[in-house]
Image 1 (cartoon, helix red, strand yellow):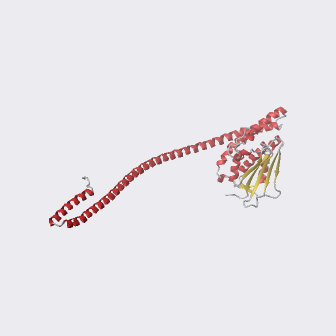
Image 2 (cartoon, rainbow, N blue to C red; image 1 turned 60 degrees about the horizontal axis):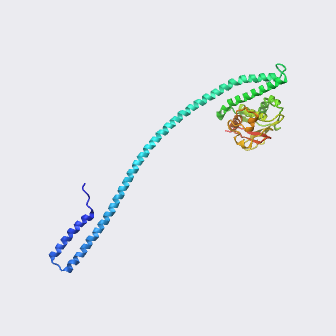
Image 3 (tube, rainbow, N blue to C red; image 1 turned 135 degrees about the vertical axis):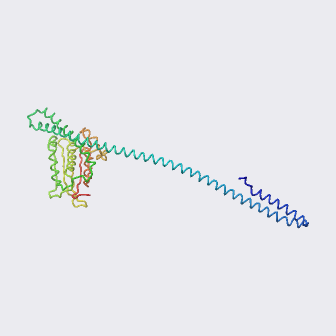
Length: 350
């Protein structure tokens, strides 16, 4: 395609040709000078105005074409950018898919390892409990003079062995029971439970422990007949054992532990019975109270009194009570004692 002729050049050529032709025509007519000029002026003015108009139109046309060219460049640039971004997104999408697949496989491996760990803990703890129970019973026989009389020095050593065995059994039980945290509520065996009888049976298990520390245990309950609660007796026994064991363990010699069964909430919107287990022990430091129900947490003053312990008892207890639809809380004063409370609904909470 040839080079485009500028409109003003084209109009200049036309104007020049017309002007020459007009002059020749007028000279041929032999008109007077005044008439000649009178006819020439409007023609010249017309040609000049038309030239200016053409120049203006050409400028607008050029600007428009330049604007369209710039827009085309912008659109081309944007199109290229969109293609680049789309290619990057496809790359990221593939990377995310690969990561998702990798995480899925890793999660499956973790689940497999978790199942293997749980099986190992369950088998190991079951295998440990039997010989530990036999050792504990042997110590108990010696301390009760059932195998013959022993000296005070021997009794002191036997008592320490008995207490160490009890601590070991408690740790083994905690490791075994921690699997209950992952147990769904539907796997609980909810039945009607006489809470008074359950508390009394659990208290009987602590006879030797309270006598060894000369601790007085008082059980308070309403005189009127109480309704049953909807609960899993095995798991509620675990809660009672944890709380009573802690109360005795962290109460000094000749202290007091009070267990109270209350019916204050029987006529509330959610009918329930409340259990309180209070001691005159070491209490809980103010700065550590928020973490008391956390997994593996033990208060600093509790560690000083008893170095052994898993820190799982209260964590397990809270989980069990919450799965029963109840609540658990505590009141404490450092150096004076702690009172744990929990409620159990009289009817099943779905």
